[in-house]
Amino acid sequence: MRARLLIALVAGALLPQAHAPFDHFWVAPLSYAVLFHLWGGLRPLQALWVGFAFGCAAFLAGVHWVYVSIHDYGLAHPLIASAITGLLVVFLATYVGLTGWTASRWFTNRGPVAWLAVFPAVTVLTEWCRNWVLSGFGWLAAGYSQTDSWLMGYAPVGGVYLMTWAVLLTAGAVPALAFGRWRLRTAAAAGLVLLWGGGYFLGNLRWSEATGNVIPAALVQGAVPQELKWRPEQLPATLELYRRLTEEAGDSRLIVWPEAAIPTLYGQAEGYLGEIRDWADARGSEVALGILRDDPGGGTFQNTLVVLDEEPSFYVKRHLVPYGEYFPVPGFVRRWLRLMSLPYTDAVPGDPGQPPLDIAGERVGVSICYEDLFGAEQRHYLPEATLLINVSNDAWFGDTVAPHQHLQIARVRAAEASRYLLRATNTGITAFIDPRGRVVARSPAFEPHVLRGAVQGFTGRTPYALWGDWLAVIGAALVLAGCLYGRMRVRPRS
Picture 1: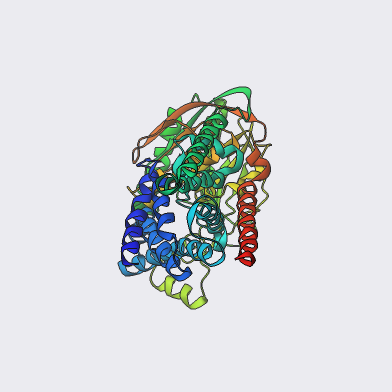
Picture 2: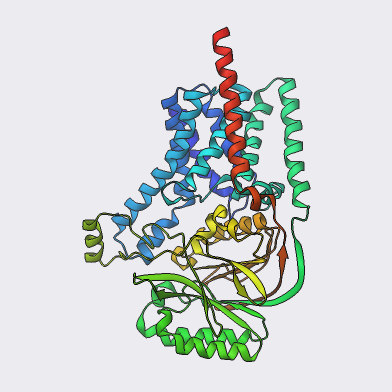
């Protein structure tokens, strides 16, 4: 067990190498192949600890940037930031531990059935649960590691969890090739050819059709440092900066600013925004930008994207960040947060069913920052939406791997919908992403920049837009039901 735990730690620590910015996509199936081999023959509690060790190493290496957000920019004490980061890592690692426990407790954990059926299917289901239980945190799902591999072709069919299943089936084929008999090795090799060939084939299909309207667009990245952004004395400089950058993009039909680009409430900036609107109208442009506003319903505030028209239209962020935009804690903890000068005020979420916005002649599905982690929540835009926009503030992550991972997640969202996605961020990574999830253009990080490009609206509904995550989830559940039925039939004969 000591050796297995040590190997699990090493394999887990290497897993983030498969994700951005490293992009060694082949590491993911190899890392999971080691985990599957380690689980072989273990009792349930042993399998739980091996999976937990793998998960702790993977998430500590992959989401350690949470400490930077809480300590460097949230100004929390190092002990508090370390404790919150550690608790998050433990919580996420528990899912991997429960995967091993479930497989060992209810199914077989030896041989080809375990490698190719049980372990991949149970992992798909636990990753899916991780994306919605307690608000959800699907970061580092195995499928996200494959944005530059042929397995990306499965995104418009079954989304990131079908991609995850493909990664895990590849992982299961590795021990089958290494330890199986000749027939098993042949079957595993043939399965890999079909799996990866299928991804290549699907990736070259056209899932949507261009409307024919080419739109010159510009994404404005102000790159105001997070530690300066909300200081009152910085506001005039920020307003002038965005005015200047917008003028540089003046010949663009669509101009997008990032999340909370202007560090004040909408009601306090209406005069300035009116000037920007008049300037854009005179040039045939439209400006959409992220900004906070007072809640019209009498609550605290809302995180919004506003389109500057005569009658401004708003999208209100609906999936809020726990412990960032709302605090599910008792009153005494909230009072302590206030005394420690930490954030403690809850934002007000928007309606889950908000329709696409009309921007630059297109119907646009909008997401703000963390919301692009939840592909299933954006399906209600489709097929009506012809274009996607995500505005974000990745300045909270600093110069870590997180902005790169976040861009990778956005790429999968574009491929799932088969739509262009315009991603405007405060400090990077601002990018144009095409309907296949490829980055067409991107800005340098931490520099004021205007990223120009041309996009088109697309129509059509992908299989993922129709079925969502259910293709992968129900498929994995049916595989496990078959395994359980087979095990129950074998036991009486034994």
